[in-house]
Length: 366
Image 1 (cartoon, rainbow, N blue to C red):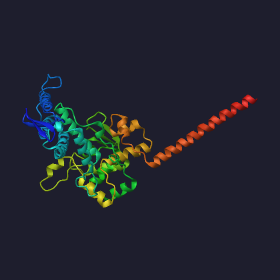
Image 2 (cartoon, rainbow, N blue to C red):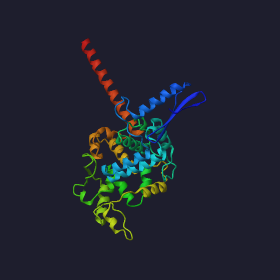
Image 3 (tube, helix red, strand yellow):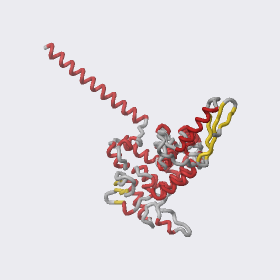
Image 4 (spheres, helix red, strand yellow):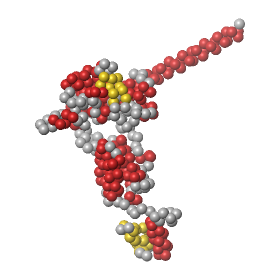
């Protein structure tokens, strides 16, 4: 037994699987402290039922390494890259910690700290988006699930704060497109007027464009709904037709060529982040928006124009209408118009009811 006293309280300390275990008995009785030490050793060596031996404790760094090795063969390169990026962020907070020391309280502290951190390369001082923090929490949960351990993440940690999605105003749209360079301008036009995801626009191929029927076929996506045909607006038709005529690659938006980079013509463009941020800065847009928010704007405007939710879900490539409803953000004007319509309807109902009562009274008097 290895118990010792601090003031009037007895503590226990021992080694288990190379790890030092220490705890307080919360009492001044040495014999009780020794009993608590023995119980703690038993709990570490066996399950609660005393049958199944628990796995040896592991540090977070080793858990990440095991998870990423598994993810390499399990996930697509893009998904693996996202998990690796989130693992790097998580390591900044939990490096060197034992897994059982990563409690829900520690995870909540991580979440709150990340939400206050400034977004990388942000010129407007904007902080990390809740959606970004959520993705890191999802990676953390996957790490624990892969190791068959109970995750310290809780449902309420996945913040649904406002600001995850944003609808671009007409003023911001005009200023942004006035300052946008190519190919950003054409990519943004396609996203805003078709609702395509940025990655879907980047990987667009000329062979999937039908200029007779004026449609775009998107063959990529994790679900059957994502693989869909989208109609072109007139602006999109002209934009894509000009792109295809001038294209030197099967990709509509290919990586720019340069000295010794001709092979990049066979690759789709992967990002326009720098051009997007620069356009926002030149346009003087005060509230930053992501390229993806042009898709949200498309969904909101389509709903306001009267497109029913089932059709909109098909256009956006959603499996359920519940998912589509997250992308629709009615404006104050749209809400006022809805209230006015309801007011007219209610007045009409009351008027018709009054007429029916009046008719009934007249008949009874006759």
